[in-house]
Image (tube, rainbow, N blue to C red; front, top):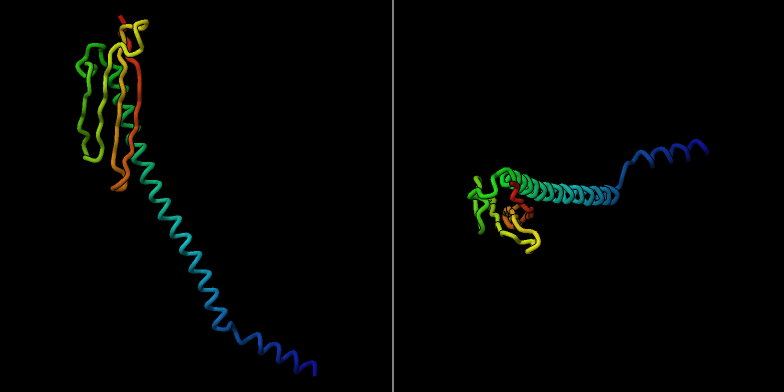
Length: 138
């Protein structure tokens, strides 16, 4: 009798999975795949935003270095708002120069604010602003 029950147990376990078990397993697998897909989409979007911010910082830093290297009375450092068209069309750069902005105690300097903005992912506006003071070194 022990041999018959062992044979019955083996034949029951060899039947495989029921349809309900397979459907539950597929549902769990599908939910996991959807979560991975969602993380991938968010990662791509985040990388796009980070790339745009990095490009803006690089462009603004380059302009700051260029303005710091210019003479105090250079045309790019004249008082007022200056704009520059950037190739590619999705970025815009401007810088504003003000003279003696730190007050009467500190004369002979210009305050410069460089702003670079871009449209990222077709809808997001990202702006980078760098402020610095240019001294009139004799």
